[in-house]
Image (cartoon, rainbow, N blue to C red; front, side, top):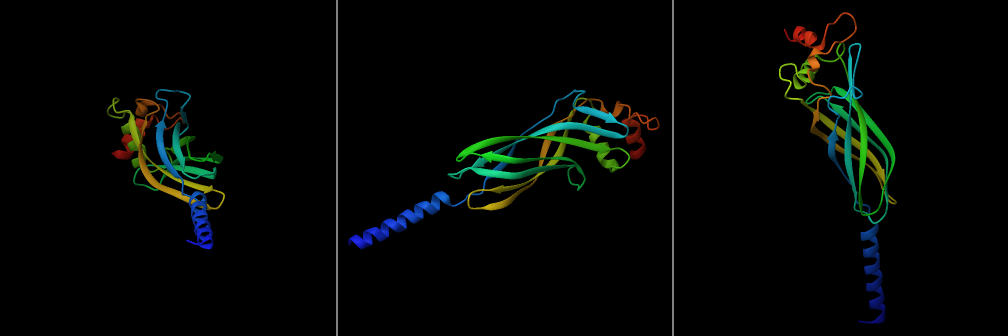
Length: 197
């Protein structure tokens, strides 16, 4: 092998290695945990005809690149299963994920449902999950969809995880027996039974 061929081979090898280490890899974002505080007055509110409670979503972001990655925006929407009815959502921005690391991101979500405006089957599903007939169930299924915009030194792109089902503990038990408090509607259980009759 001549000296010229050796240097050509060395340059090709160097370019290949540089491309390997600098080629941006798409991050992996996965929902790791869903938490809610059961039986917490601070986490659950009944305002007029509106139900409101809070959950926290924890995402794990894996950066396989050899350089830091920045998530400009990450947002989550929470839906009632098999519907387009959004119950709430959350958004975070300006997140730095170090090279070759996994970062955990906690996103608070406020779930809201208006008894007067929301579809009746969703209200029925909420109170059935949280104690209309059986106080021992205490869990509801929701769907979470994530959208993120991220950038690295050489790439800017978007990532959508699609919907996935999560199980959330009810903020209170016997949800159907709580008073709506608008002076005309009785309690949540009365409304459900009327709508379901």
